[in-house]
Image (cartoon, rainbow, N blue to C red; front, side, top):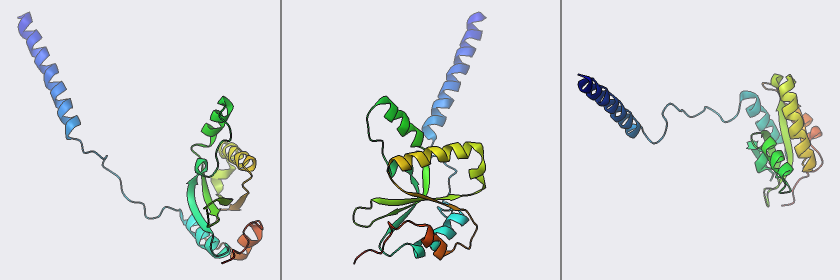
Length: 167
């Protein structure tokens, strides 16, 4: 009788393992449940982007939602430098304006909405500000609005680094 119960338990476990293997092997390569976004920018970011395109002299490239680690890098190879790199690895910049010949960053731009008033975000922004200052890349912060960004105000706030390019 004990052997019969042991055989039933063994068969049940084997059936369970086979079912798990079948489920695992029948899964598609890519996870399901994704869909394309309507826009890569929020409404406020998109409104600012269009105003920024008109405010920046012709010839410059504007990149949106770019990783900070792709714009600046840690200069050294020490353990402290590795820690610094980890502090910025998951951070993004709302916009980066680059010169056209090498796509070198000229200025970083952040839109600060209501979330930038929380203590957590203030600390995160301080890390980003310090990293950009250390890399000597100017950062200009604008308040986030749903619409109505002034092209003249954007031009006034951008540094003189964005001079018209010679063609």
